[in-house]
Length: 164
Image 1 (cartoon, rainbow, N blue to C red):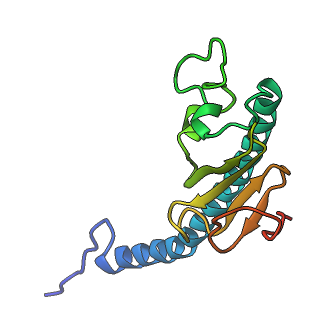
Image 2: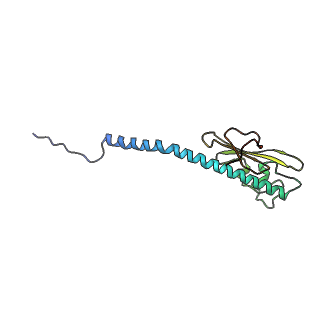
Image 3: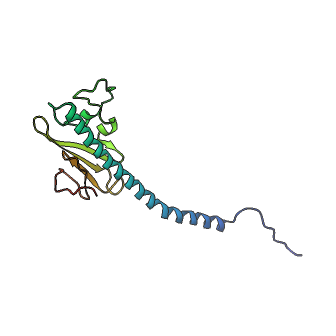
């Protein structure tokens, strides 16, 4: 008697394992690039938000010269009040997310507002999770130059180098 081997249609376990291994290798190559791209996008958005805050501070100072610069991010925002009309307590110059201090994986703080009227300020952007949402810190003050540092920034002044 002769036994004939019949081949069933489909894939063998070995073939499926090879395909899964190839997919895992491709994923291992792609995921770090994706994470790096997201960090770069978050950092770019943080620098743009610092520029937006500088513009808002200049506009606020022009609109309310007896007050000077805004004392908080909430003052620059609208606090969901509908912004009709803008006032020195809700200027409606930035969106509510940025006014709340969070955007694109970064935390924004406005501090060191001093003078009568307010003549100085510091705005600092720090990544929420270092090496995940970003690695660089950004800041600016009344000169409106965006500055960058790899180390945490507590106060922004001329010792922090400008962004290139």
